[in-house]
Image (tube, rainbow over all chains, first blue to last red; front, side, top):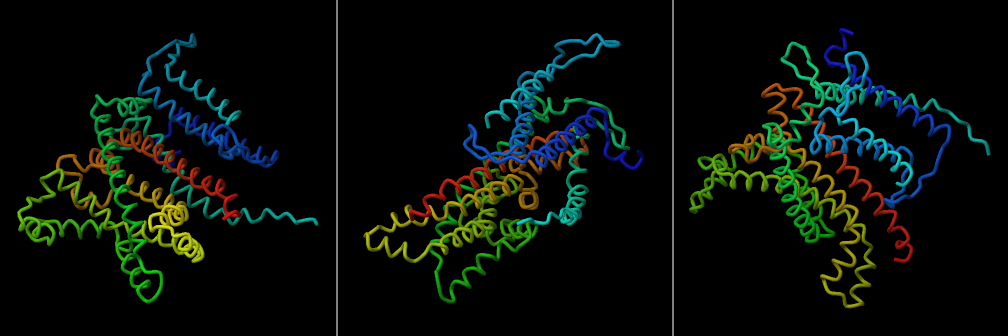
Length: 108
Length: 300
């Protein structure tokens, strides 16, 4: 672990990157196992699953930033686990991002 | 017929993958890690969550104010240089000779500014514009124009913009020239038979044919000007005050000047996101502009 100390890893960012890598791995496997053709959606541009994933991820980043900028990150709930885990309102942005990702995968 | 499937070629991609991993992916991951933490040096980090992003996106904080100020400044700069370089590049391309020895001469002269490294361009203009020893600065002051890019905001902006125009208009001109060269002579002959005016030839033949290269030119110039660092840093150092501090200059000030790695990481991620989005939009428009026009090609 000493050798990667310069990267200043934290558990949350590590989880984030593991999820990201897992998503990419699953999408790669899908692309190999079930090849698909491009299709044209509401943006009127031909997109593949990979394109739609890219748009979803960018949208997620934008949604989170807009949420931080306009709505803030106040605590909205406390989970009754241990001493209580405070839930930031930013998780709502995550939910919105997931919903938008589903919408993007279906319509774009 | 059966094709033999050989996936060994993937190994040829391995060196590129490794290079990209070490030069781009790992550093970018580190930046993400930094953006969530605060540090006082000595490789000790403290969790800060999205605190830096909150500050960055709130114009009432110091970081937010600096970010938005430099962002608008940079967008304005990009808009101005695009508004000058694209029309100017088209005009230059249109007035270039089509054949003979002068073609080569024009191309070489146009290519010269493109070959000069950024910091040298900055140094050239830094000296060129000095009121005491620079040709431009001395001449302007001699004819009664009080020009001093070190103390006057407008002069600093004018210098940086003229420098960028001097450095990069050639790129737009060369791209447009390549687009113009691809137009068959028959188009012009047809236009002549129809008695088309010079303007009609430009709007109906030349401009549509230059469409793709112009998109590439706009994309390249936007990205370059949006990421500009060296030239204004050498000439004005971001001054006077903060008047020519573009985003990358602000970023370096925060990261290396103040050593606020967390703030700088948050800023660079948002900066990166903007660039990725703009790139994607340009790329999508570019590739689809081609596919939509494909059916016309058969008709024309």
